[in-house]
Structure formats: structure tokens, C-alpha cells
Image (cartoon, rainbow, N blue to C red; front, side, top):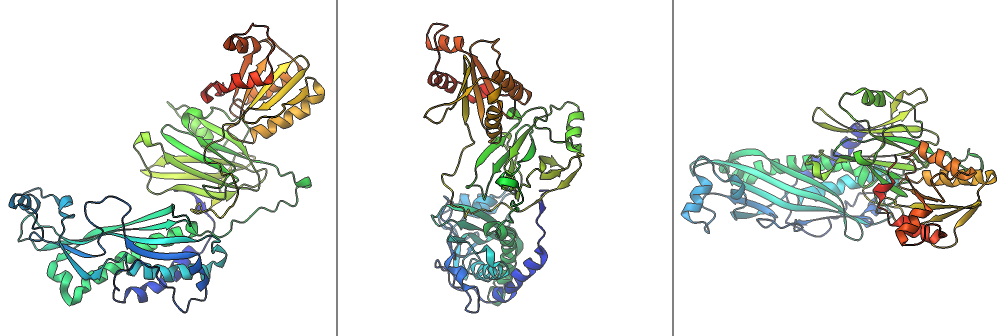
Length: 527
């Protein structure tokens, strides 16, 4: 993922956070527990335990072939008494033994050897989280959440094709879940290891010393994943733009160009503190993106190379977005493509007023990358600094939009008059005199509509040849940039024909709104 992150001393932070691991992991495992792990008494930032609870226990979220392993399970050829001799032969002999089914045999449980997800990982995480909030006290959340370590697999499995083969493989699987105050899942980290083999005697020697050493290494690898995600799970406040210099509080918008490709979706969230708290959301796909720079963002090397590519149809979209507000971009393959990227491609940054940006989801050399670039006036670019998108919202705005905007403004032209009505709202329509004195008011309305991605226009005119001051200005503005404000143009005769009225019958704004709302969104695609 080619995102330029905000500069942070990551290696030093990781070293500081992992420092408690050596001391903690060297201790013997305690009995399984499902209660929150206590914070160290010496933790000067103990207040964090009121906001972040660390728990452990069995993984019971999914249906599984075996009960979660809270303690070590050992599977030998003789441990499954329920299998028939023929079943045992299929699992433990022959050229193609059933390893997957073998991993789920009941086996024998060693109660004194707890899964690292039950004891070791939560203990280390307690020191880790406390250290993180000492390092970044401003990241302490205002809302409560839970970090739950869930044990799934902790088993030694006989690996031979015959009973005489002595090797046993250690299989481990567990998860770390971040859950919001209401219990909903915010983030999940998967930990899995199955690469260590030894004889059963070697595993059991010196009170399972080899097993305990393996548990420490597994814990280290899993906690390293947690360290990478902690800044997104509990982010520091995002630095805001100083907007005081803008006269009258009028902040210029920023602009962004988003490229599209087959089977891929890049999602834009505007004024977004996180994925659940934003003003607008729009999914840029190949079939809803345009084929030219509709806002005039300077041409970049990426744009030129796509224009010059053979056997390729150029597809991108450009938007105005609020300046001085955070943006979030996410990219992924569509489910129907049957492709996926390892990890989440997502980043957040504050859009500088008046600045242009460019976003490209690239797949090359079997790697997924999300490029976010600043675009300068001469077409040159620099990587945009971005941070991992927060997983839990601290914002309190309501209502939160959970679907892309599908707003529609209906414009009805009549003799000397233009009526404008938001299709989603009632009340009296806005009325403008259809002459040059209303041109500025019309331009303001169009500017506001174009700044909200997803807004479309339905224009009803007396006839196909109708001309007026506002009509001609509207047509020039909209049809010159059809992807900014997708529009549909209808005549009053067509409206009357659809409702079974005389062709010259008068059409009011309510009738025009009803007519326009009957059209699917795809009919408004820019031409």
C-alpha cells in the first residue's frame, strides 16, 4: 500500500512498546481467564483501563469443527476412540492422509498449558496499551471499548503417514477483536502459526519448555500486528488546518481526481472523522466514472500515461470537496472480481483549501497500492501524507450517512420564471425570475450542488428549443461538465404524456418532482 504516512518514530515506538514483552512472556502461563486483565500497579496512566478493557477467553463467534482450545490439545493416532479402524487408517496412513480433519480430532487436553491467547497475549497487551497511552496521552478515547483475545486453536498434531512417524506440528490460531461500547466489531486481527515440528518428547521435555518458548514467539508476532494497528484503533487527534485567514469564513474547496478501473472501487468520504462519521460518501467505479477532467485539475503523468495506453478506456472522476476538512479514501476489488488485497487500503488526511489531489488504486507485481498525491499547478505531484483510518469514531454528529448521497434538484422552467425544488424535501420551491438578474443566484445554487457528490439535476422545460437567460446558462454549465452534475432534461409535453394529460396542460413543480423521481439514477449519467 503506497500511502505516505505522517512522520512518526515508528521503530522507536515499536521498540518501546515491545520492551515489556521479554519480562512478561518469560513468566509461566496462568490458568485460563475470561475477566479483564488487570493493569500494572506502576502504570502512571492507569486511567486508560476505564476506557479500554482487555479480556480473553474462547472464540465462540463462529461455528467450528472443534471446541476452542483454551489449553493445549494433543492429537495422536490413538487419541480418537470414536473413529473406526478404517477411519483411523484414512487419517494416519496411506499416501494422502487427511491433515485438515486430523487437526480437529478431540485428542487429549493438557490443562496446565494454556493457549497464549488466554494468558500471555492479554498480559503483554496490558503493558503495551499502557505504554502507548503514556507515549500518546492525547489518544485516550472518550468512549469505552474492549480488546478481546479469543483462543481458537492450540494443538500438537501427529504428522506422520504411519503411527511410527514421531513428528508433531504445533498449530495455533487466535484473534484480537476491538469492540465498541455497544459490542459491535470495529477491528479484527488474525494470528496463525503452523510451522514448528518436533517429536512429542521434545515438546514435553522440561515441563513443555519448547512449547513455552514457541508461545512466546507466537505472542511476539501477534503483538507486532497489534502494534501496527494501535494508532488506527486509538488515533491521536488529526491536525486541523488554520482557517482563520480566510475572509468571512468562506473556505475555498479542494479538488480531487479519482481514477477507476474494471472490478475495482475507490470510495471517497468527505468531512470524515472515520468510516461511520462523514458528510458524503461516493463509490467511484468504472461504470460511473467519466472520461475527461471535468473540473480542470492539471494533467499529471498518471493521467497522460492512461490516455496513451493502448487498448485502454480512460475512466476517472473529479470532485470538489470541503477545504480544511478530513478526507478518507478506501480502495478494494469488487466481490464479483474474486480478487482481493492483503490488508486494507485506506488513508485519512486533511484537504488543504484550494489544493488539488489525485487518487489511484494500482495493482502491479502482485501488490495492491493506493496512491494519494498532491497535484501542483504545473502537473507535477508529490505524495500526500496520510494516516491509517481510525477504526472507532469519537464524533457525535447525527444523523450519520450510511449510503451514498442520491440527492436530486428539480428545476422547472415556465414563462419568465424558474422554480427549484429539492426532491427529498417538501415546502415551497425556490423561485427565480428567468432573466440576467438571477444569474448569480443560479450559479450559487449550482456551486452548492456540485460540491456535494451524488447530487443530480432534473430539468423540465416548455420545449426542446426553449431558450432563456437562466436556461442557457444552466445548459452551458451542466453540459460542459456532465459528470459533476449528472442531469436529465425533459419537456412538459413528455411529462404530460407520462401522466396521461393533454400535451399543453400546465405542469406544476409537484408534478415535475413526481415525474423526475420515477427515473432510475443511471438515467442521469453524464453524456
